[in-house]
Image 1 (spheres, rainbow, N blue to C red):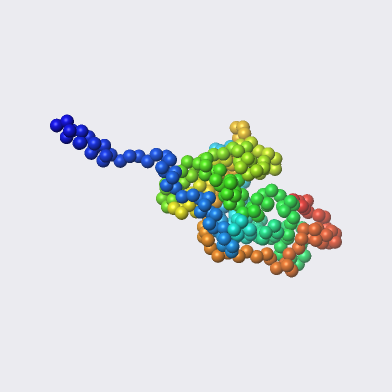
Image 2: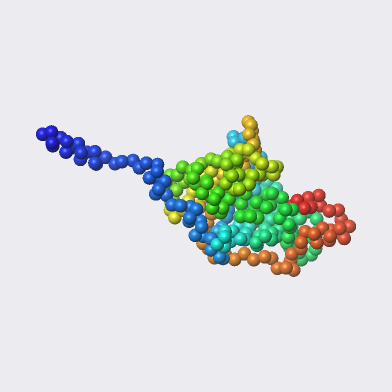
Length: 280
C-alpha cells in the first residue's frame, strides 16, 4: 500500500510543470549583437525612423517640438559607412533638411544655411568639427540615440545589463546604465548633449528585437544631470528593411560648395557673415 502511495506521489510531482529560471529564459533569447554583425555587408543597410522629445523632469511637459529623423544607413563589414536622411523640428516652420554622409564627408542641404549661397550649389560640405554636436551625432548613424547600437562593445554592455522577456514577435530587453559606466565602455568621456562637457546621469532603455535578434525598436530616456527637474531626452527609434540593397553616393561635385568657399563668397557679396558660421 505504501509502495502504491509513493508511486502516486512521484507521478503527481512529475506531472507538475516546472517554471523556467531566469537563466534559462535568457539562454533561449537570440544574440542581438551577433545578429547585427551579420548585417554588416557591403551595399546593404537599414531604414531609420526616429522621434526625439525633450523634457524638464521626467513628468514635466515637453520642451519644444523635438527632432524627427527618417532615412537610410548603409553598412560595410566595419559597420555604418554612409547615411542619407532628413530631419526637422515639427514646432518650427523651417525645414525639413536633408543630409548625406559618405565616409568622412558630410553634405548639408544648402537651404539650411542662413546666408546667400551661389546658384546651383545645393549642398554645403562642412568640416565635421564645425557642424555642432547634434549635427555630428545625426550624421554618424542618422540618429540621436545615446546608445550606439552599431558599436559591438556598447551593445554587448547594454545587453549584459538588461533583463529580457519574450514578447509577441521576439524579445524585449530593459535596463539602465550610468553615463560614467557608458564612458568606460565607449573608451572616452560620455559628453553632455546640451553642453559638450562630461555628464552625470543615467540612460534607461527598452529594446525590442525579432525572433532572430534583429533590432526592431529602441526607446531610451537620457537624463542630463541630476536634481529635481533635470533635462531629459526621450528617443524612440524604429528599424526596418534590414538587409535591403542600399548604395548611398555623394552629391554631384558641381552642386557642392565647401564651407570656406561659401564664407568667401558671402564676403565678396558684401554681406555680413552669418552669426552661426562654423557652428552649423
